[in-house]
Amino acid sequence: MDHMEDAVAEMHGLHTGWTSARTLALEAADELVKAQTKHPGPMHGPHEGYAVILEELDELWTEVRAQKQDKMLMRKEALQVAAMALRFMQDVCGQ
Image (cartoon, rainbow, N blue to C red; front, top):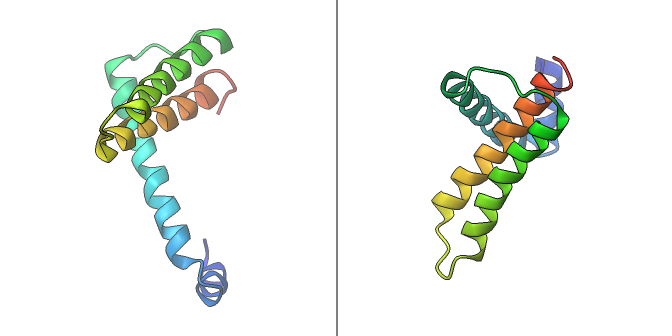
């Protein structure tokens, strides 16, 4: 966002939301880099990419269904879903 966009966003009370969204996006990007370091090969097509995202989503679903929900574990799994969605866009759809 440039200075004008910052000013407009702040006037409308959006600045905090944008900052939060940017922080979350950067956290997902960091998680993507960690995953790429651990598993350096790219996703080999949309079916594999979908399967990887689904695996992460299933792990999130397990935490959601838990008798006693742990917000930190749910957040961790949601972050991994986001990172794999980014990887799908990068590896399967192109940068």
